[in-house]
Length: 395
Ligand SMILES: *Cc1c(COP(=O)(O)O)cnc(C)c1O
Image 1 (tube, rainbow, N blue to C red):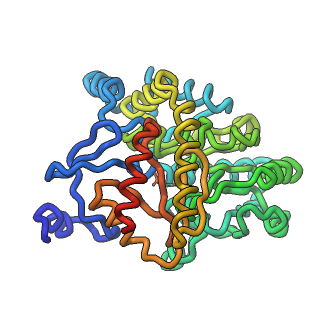
Image 2: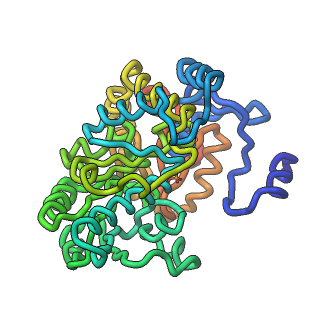
Image 3: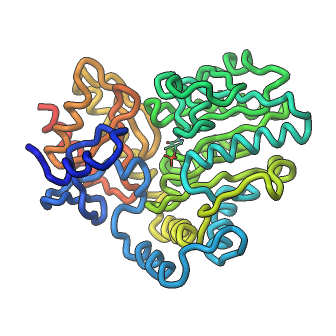
């Protein structure tokens, strides 16, 4: 079945994605509608972005109001939305200082620069190595790609930035084995997303914090996907009580406008990036910061964390039951409303497209994991509906 929109899109857009054959038109709550009016229950949320669901009136009104006032001024001036957004990130994280970026990838770039600059300032130029994790995902720019633990993504673009050593996630000894007198930082996702939904163990995170304290390394936690409430904590590291030196955010930070941030703790705030070391034209403009600001307000007003804990527990229960029931479902992993089911012995692409036919959007992570990252406002009834539709898709 050919679709004229898809044909014309493919004619003009560089083919770097194999997109699903759906042309989306609008959204309402936890539902999306395609140009033919077909309704989808959305368990993808634009890849863990649309935490508040679609067409939240208070959110859209805040954006409209800001558009009428001012969208962009550059970082040569202050704006009230930037001040407010930064204060809210600071309060929610308990960390020191924020730098707003346009994407997750750029937040990673900034975080890597913080680690390098901290070490450069204190120890000179030969201490630059970064330890990163196998199966990690941090983005597609040359820097972010350099610390992404997927050779398939990296190889065609090498040489990337030097001085990166890969090691195994949740294996403290393998990290320790990579530390040299040149190491300046360690980067990891608090919960690996794209790599297949693997939460960090408490032992691993606490061990890394101790290691970074002992060797004076910068600990970077990538919270781009798992942060902003998805695990039931505002930031996933808060569950472990392990504070990073730098945290990266994006995805749900603006719930649909392109905004990311790197946030630094005391150690990196005191001696790392200084005037002239880093910049961005768009980053943190009044428009995106108005979004960030209203997002934090709505998280409180709508009790998002409480909902994630309650509905996340329910989703966990339901997914565990599916794993019990179907032998091609090997395992469930995840926390709160970031969950994965590993699929073995059945083509995962078929499950996803059959689910779409049934009216539910589910995406994948890694090569064989079904990823469940719905809007954080979903209800137990939505979970039931998703499970019913997914089971129909499995018939
Ligand atoms: C999505 C993602 C990124 C990249 O963010 P972009 O906004 O696509 O640049 C980095 N790290 C993690 C963990 C992500 O999930």
